[in-house]
Image (cartoon, rainbow, N blue to C red):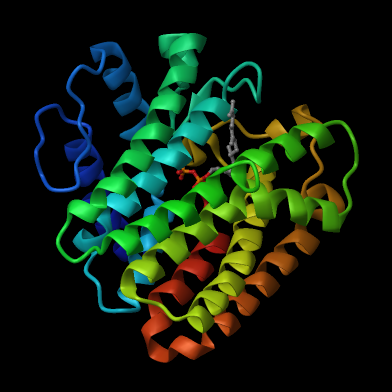
Length: 305
Ligand code: GRG
């Protein structure tokens, strides 16, 4: 199985579903209610949501659910909810009060096109819509209400103050100061890792995972997140804006400690490779069923975008 082909196919399905879920009048089971939503807000939400991106978090939901034989469409509301939350975080992260970026996913950032107030509300709207979708999936055949509730809890923990939002606060607090390796790992485990972890857990919960299996996926998620973040730091130095769709050199401009600034380019890459090996080792309990998750971990350090 070629992971690039796999990701392309999953992205196509996710893009179609995101389009459907944000189209007025859609009555498919599990879809949100959009009637009355101001047209400019819906347009601005769709602008950022349908701008591309690797769709990694949905891929993790789908791959984790796939461990239990679920098809992508059975977990599509959850997969799309994770992408909505991720997109909200990017829109807010790009605001002038945060990283103040002009380019995202190869396009002008939300606040450049719609202004700061709408961009802030786009983020708020996407975050809330994500939770509406997670709750509504109890309306879909095969998703038991107690499963849907567990997924809501997992995602709230990963996206909230003890996860992604808290990590962003920590990240901002360290700007201009030199964090050590352990501090950096803590920041990114919250800021980026928590959403990957929630994606994997959500997919696995929908598939009926045991507690031991969730623990194995947590170990995978931690190493996957670390490898992803190291490569993100590497690409901020070596990446090509035409491919990453965002400016490079942002970390230096914001005086952020990164894996590259701490360990050098080669040292950082070596650490990323080690993290991938650890991620793969964590999947041992799943045997052959884990092939996609293995390839996804390899992909995060091989990617150029
Ligand atoms: C509440 C005002 C307010 C702000 C919160 C939570 C937050 C803003 C920001 C933190 C999240 C963040 C921007 C993390 C950065 C992680 C990262 C490297 C994102 C890029 O992810 P990719 O490479 O992007 O998966 P694509 O575009 O491929 O989806």
